[in-house]
Length: 318
Image (tube, rainbow, N blue to C red; front, side, top):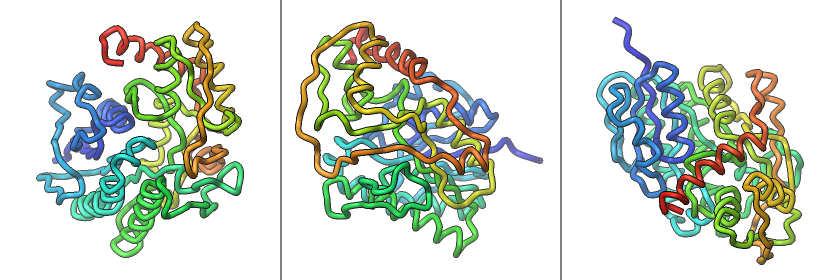
């Protein structure tokens, strides 16, 4: 008797993890979300309460994972993922990248499941190559304050490839560039929630440095589509997922003010240590191998995200 496909999502109550849970349920999978709620939030998955195909387990993924029954996909998305988080939680960040990846790979190996690692554009560090292709090895400061995240993810990639080569685990690696959308944490230190919150509250926008550093922003639905295509595909080497539309922080501040429909002042603060000056994905491989590219415009994505933050503000949760 064939079973419904089963997907395990570590970090399933997080921003990306919760959207991935929704998508895999829509794909007809049973979904088991694991999260210790250090940076995840049950509010992100409360709409799934009572869904018989969904199960939430409070669990620290750095501890041994025991799950009865078959598992087809293991999506390892557990990790603090914003500069504030990894500065406040440096050891947890390293542990979830190292021990957590080891435990999640162990589960995939034991179950004969496909393993999908959420890696990051941060493996490229402050890049000396622009835009960044997957073949670029990066420019990372291993002992700087951001190194705990960068090196945790680089180690996670190395561990994933080792399990693929040594144990034949069917593994995938997605390198995720800046992504935004509903369910981002308001105070996670990332630019999208920070700018939107400041504008909605009528506070000045805080820009670090001179505002000429660039980022590229991908809407979460596009990103999840890319992840799913990679998960179903046959490619084991890393794949960049992100939106190549690159803009400066000053331009981005303008866009957010336009979508929010109000103007605020801008204040400049010193640039944090090892903050990347440029960030733009080369998505040639994703396009060529999977026919994937972002389709949601920045304006549409921002509109949906601003609506979510307006609702939080109305509920007193901002």
